[in-house]
Image 1 (tube, rainbow, N blue to C red):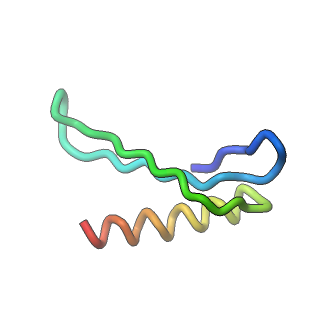
Image 2: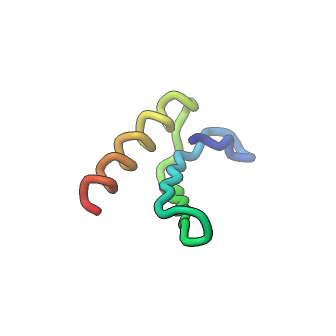
Image 3: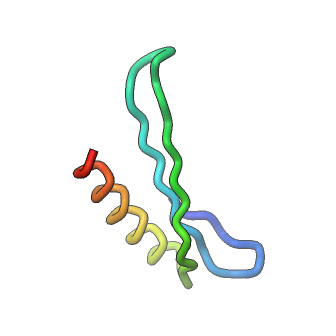
Length: 56
């Protein structure tokens, strides 16, 4: 996911859901770097999300 910053640029976010029903958990991670475009932010979020999933 991406989110526009108020002063310009974009943030990269990842949402990872696990579990089912009442036992489901949704983790949302927002990364520190600011990106010049939504495409760049999305590319970074995808790479970081996949890396996190491989470690866990």
